[in-house]
Amino acid sequence: MTDEFTTEIYYDDDADVSTLDNETVAVLGYGSQGHAHALSLDDSGVDVVVGLHEGSSSRDTAEADGLTVTTPADAAAQASYVSVLIPDTVQPDVYENAIEPNLEAGDTLQFAHGLNIHYNQIEPPEDVDVTMIAPKSPGHLVRRNYVNGEGTPGLFAVYQDTTGDAADRALAYAKGIGCTRAGVIETTFQEEVESDIFGEQAVLCGGVTSLVKHGFETLVDAGYSPEIAYFECLNELKLIVDLMYEGGHAEMWDSVSDTAEYGGLSRGDRIVDETVRENMEEVLEEVQNGEFTREWILENQAGRPSYNQLREAEKNHEIEQVGERLRDLFAWAETAESEDESATV
Ligand code: NAD
Ligand code: MG
Ligand code: MG
Ligand code: MG
Ligand code: MG
Image 1: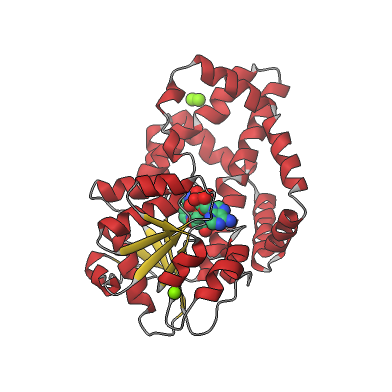
Image 2: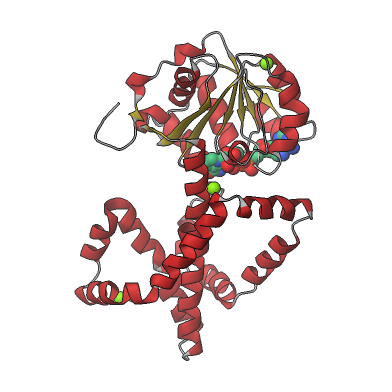
């Protein structure tokens, strides 16, 4: 633990995998996170059973990987610790049908994202521990780091502690998948969910794609070639973000030309101005008051009509057509690691 930060950070010394010695952990789902957690827990000596519905294409993979596979209901029944690693949109249904009937007093119900708990789509009984271990990385990287002896930073939260051991058990799990090697930051379900959803809407996924499209359109509308606009507004973004990732804004500003630095520093706030900040506050409020989640749940219940429409429009944007042609012509895209493409943020 360290007190240099505003929140607790836990490392290997703060956790003991043997806390789970007398437990069976059910890992439900074998996708991005599920396969990483199940394999690494198994390697860490934890008793693991994978829960997948009959007919799931992941069943063969999990079995070939040497794991025990059964149905989600049976896995939950066998286990005292249930890690829910199926898509957030199907969790409430699987919870109701397969998990809830098999929870016993003192069991742990664990998530890697707090959405369904925080917005009351899953309401666990009062006599189970409810925790979160959320690696801050796609599952394939979580697994690769574990195998290489490295760690993946993660978030940790306790929503409900009935056994008195909820934190120790969750940290043991975090250690079992290698997260405490890198550090596990304590948070709450509310903070994790609201900051995650806001971040992906305002900056990471929504904000950045809109910024790129506006830049691209501005150049193309002014008569510049779409290929040049693509490189300038989309392709180069990776180089800039890599520098920010390594050393913050400072390293990026240091690495670009003085012209780019002066231009960026003097013009950036004119592009993303106070009105954008007000829009962000509005979007955050919709996340906080549940409006966004209600909309998303209804959207799913209706068969995703708006979602499909938005996806189609995005696919048809000129920048996508240009990018597809260019990526076919140039070799750089081949080095991208396709296995990390399943990232969710
Ligand atoms: P995923 O889509 O990669 O995998 C889903 C798995 O669930 C698959 O094995 C699939 O077979 C199984 N599944 C689908 N429908 C099912 C059903 N009805 N019953 C049983 N199993 C079913 O999921 P993921 O991206 O690993 O996400 C799992 C959880 O982890 C989510 O809560 C997500 O928010 C969280 N999370 C994901 C990441 C990430 O980078 N992928 C990072 C942090 C947290
Ligand atoms: Mg059980
Ligand atoms: Mg340039
Ligand atoms: Mg330049
Ligand atoms: Mg997210």
